[in-house]
Every structure is written in structure tokens, then in C-alpha cells.
Image 1: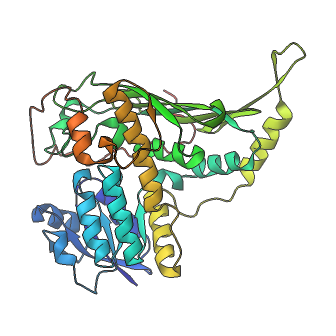
Image 2 (image 1 turned 45 degrees about the vertical axis):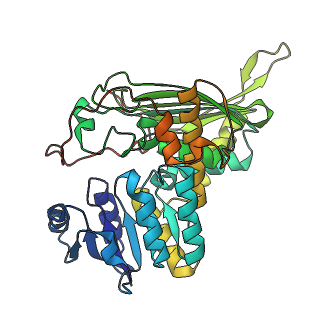
Image 3 (image 1 turned 120 degrees about the horizontal axis):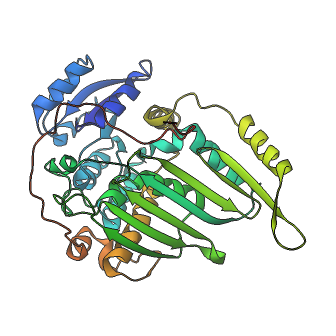
Amino acid sequence: MLRVAVVGTGNISAAHVNAYLAFPERCRITAVVDMYPEKAKAKAKQFGLDVEVLDSHKLLLGRSDIDLVSVCTPPFTHACICVDLLNDRKHVLVEKPMAASLEECDRMNEAAARSGTVFSVVAQNRFREPIMNLKHVLDSGLIGRVLHAQIDSYWWRGHCYYDLWWRGLWSKEVGGCTLNHAVHHIDMLGWMMGLPRRAVALLSNAAHDNAEVEDISVAALQYDRGSVAQVTSSVIHHGEEQQLIFQGERARISAPWNVYASTSKDNGFPQRNPALEEELHAFYERLPRLKHTGHEGQIDNVLTAIETGTAPLITGVDGRMTIELITAIYQAGFQQKAVELPIAKDDPMYTAEGILASAPRFYEKTNAVVQLGSGQDISVGSDYGQKNKP
């Protein structure tokens, strides 16, 4: 029985608590931690948890009765908390984004390597069937080499979203929609296509004049052999429609799942290839169903890694690649020029201090509240099934 602590009891912590509660024979939550203990007590009461309530992660250090810690705090705190816990030989699952900079990612991964414990970064959408299946289809080679990817990370957030005390500040949220919302989709792109060679980008704040950070960015990424990906990150898109489209040499596939395959006529114009489409559909339908999905799927994977001494699907190295992609988009947008990857350790953008020194402040943050309104439901992205019809 693994004993679990949850550090940070804001909105996203509920996804972790629910996921742990799905495995009562394998783990038990024994502590919740928040700098505001009343929030931690309310969270424990909400889920009927009989747990210890603490006001600092440091109170978990040196204790042998805590095996695994979920870190659900604001992004600027991730590195220091995770390094402390990993050095204490705790297993750690940290919410996205992994950290504020590549330098912090490297410190976290070095601590994980020293400790020999399991370290995983939340990317729960990999544990959704349409995304997992899309990865399997790409890896099958049935569509040929990917020539173009279109990543639409469309979200919508109201003006008051950035009134929360740590949001909308480069020093606290360490980025806008590119880092904190599109991180899911950029993780998926990196998982499926790897690291590009070059990035160009535009950043803007079109609708949130109470935040320093961007609320929309548009990036183009170039890979080897001329392949290109375009990534739109947004919190200004009504409907929050999200999709990943991959145009291969032989066919187009996407999440939500859709297929179109073409062959060439003698004159170079396209004709549909129903045989390949049927083959792709059949391959997709034969893929095994996931027993657990979303956060529950990732926590099942982390628990299994701890129980079996194996690596989780999403490691700190994977989390670092996502941060490197995002850092390249930011650098390209800040400097308004193409950026080459990988980003070197002597690059100013390697550190959080360098990012803060370069980042544009679109607006001055004008409000700071400890907690937003009473609505408890939050959106954590599309399930990538069939799109809703009005």
C-alpha cells in the first residue's frame, strides 16, 4: 500500500485525489498540504479524507510514512518542491508545466537520477484513447512520413481568470497560454514528432488587460527533411475546440479521429484512396482499449512504475522536452526571429532569470485575489472524441 501526499489543494488537485481514490487497494492519501491550511481542510472534507493537514511540503521531509507526492502548486514552485522531495527519496508526480526553465528541469532530473525514485510529469492527455491510438497509428508508418502537423490548442478564459494572485505574472505563472494551456498539446506534438530544428512565433495579449502574459501565440516549427508543424495556443477561442492533425505522405489522420487518404492521378491531381482509409480505420479499431484514462490513467501508470521498478510512460526527460519546445516558441516570439534548437545551457533563455529579463509585459496586473469565485468545475481539455454539435 503506497502512502500518498498531495501538495497544493487548488482546482487541479481534485483530479489527483479522484484518481488516487480509484485505486484503494494500491494507495491511500494520508496528507494534504497547502500554504493556506483552511483550503487543505476544505479539500479533505470535500472528499471525505481522513488525513493530516500540513502547511508546507518541508514537513513531509525525513518521513518514512510518505511514499509518493503529487505536486499541484503554481508553476514557479515546482522545481524547489520537487528537488526537496526527490532528494528525500520520495516518488514524485508533478503537475504541468514541469518548471519555469530548462535549468530547473535539469535540476529536477538530476535529483531524480540521484534518488533512483520514480519521477513523472503530468501529461494526462497521453492517456486518452484518441491520443494514444493516434500515436500508435503514426508509429505504424501507415501514413508515411509526417509532412505537416496542425496543433490547435483552443481554450477560453474570462477576464477575471487572471485575477487569481499568481496568474498572469511572468514571475509566478512563468508564462501565458503557451506554457499553461498548450503545454498539453505541445507535449503531444513532442511525443509524436520529437524536437524540431527551428521555431518562429508571434505572441500577443488580445483580451486580458489584467495580465502581463500572452493570451494567444502562433508558432511554426521546422523539422528535418522540411516537415513543418504549426501550433496555435489560445485562451480567447470560444468553444475550446482542440485538435491534432497530421498530414502524412499517404494520408491525413487526426484527433478527433478522422482519416483522408489520397493517391495521385497521372496529371498529379488527387484521387481518394478508400483502401488505405479502410486499412487505417481497421488498424485503429484493433488497438486495445485503455482501462484507465486521463489523470487516473497516468496515476495508474505511476503506481505501476513504483510497484514494478520500471520507468513511467512520462518521465522528467519527456517533461523537459516539452519545456524546451515552449521556451523556443517564447524566445522566437520575444526576439521576433527564428530560434535554433536545442537550446544551449549558455543561452540566456536557459534560466528563469533570463526568461524574465526578456519577457514582454503586455499589461500590468491590476488585481490579485487569493481565491476566485465559487464555481468548482474546471475544464481540463477535450476528450478528443467526436466534436459536439450545436
